[in-house]
Amino acid sequence: MGKKGQISLEFLFIFAILLILLAYSVKNTTFQQGSQSIETLRVQIALEEKELANTISGAISQAYSQGPGSKTTVYVKLVYLRKPYYLEKVWGVADPMIFVTYGQHLNDGNGTYVMVLNGTGTTKVILTGGNKNAFWTRALYQRDLLGNSTVWGGSSASVDFGTGVTTVYGLRLDPSTIPQVLKVVVEWNPDLPNSWVFNSTAGELMININPGG
Image 1: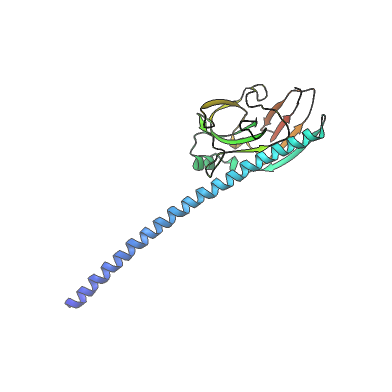
Image 2: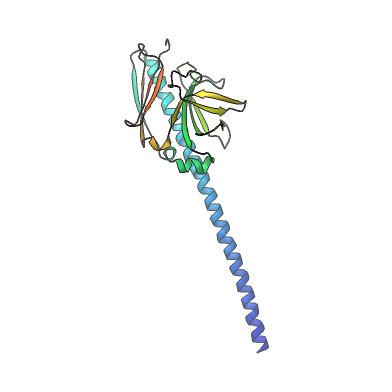
C-alpha cells in the first residue's frame, strides 16, 4: 500500500507540473497571436496609407501633365483606415484622424502626405522605419501647400517632424466618415484657386490645382 500511495503521489505531482506547463504554453501562445494581430493591422494600415498617397499623387500628376482644363477621376478602396478602433490599437492615439496634406517637408520634391494623427493633441510624425505613421508620394505638381490655410479651409494639425512642434495645414478626415471606396477628383481649373475639399456625403475628395493661382 505504501508503494502504491507513493506512486499515486508522484503521478499527481507530475500531472500538476504538466498542467502548469500547459497553462503557460496556452497563455504564451495567446500573447504571441495578439502581438501578431497588431503587427498585421500595422502592415495593413500602412499599405492603405501608402495606396491613398499614391492614388492622390498619381491623379494630380495626370491632371497636371494634361494641362489647363483637364480632369482626372480615380478610386481607392479603404478598409482599415476607416476603423478608429484599429488606429487606436496600433498607434495608441486618442481620437484618431487621417490627415492629408500636400507639399514639401523633405527635400525630395512636392507630394501627398497621408498620416494617422492624434485628433486632440500633437503627434510625432515618423516617415521612416518600421513604426512610421505617415507616408509620402511625390507628384509632378510643384506647389508647397503645407503652410497655406486658405487651400484647406483653415483645417490644420499640430505635428512634430522631429524638429519641434509645428502647425501644418491639411484635411482632417474622421475615419468613420471615409467611404469604403473613396472617389478622388482632380481638376486643373485656371479660374479657381488651389483647393482640397472632402465631401463625406458624396464620398469624394475634390482637388483643384492652379499653378498660377
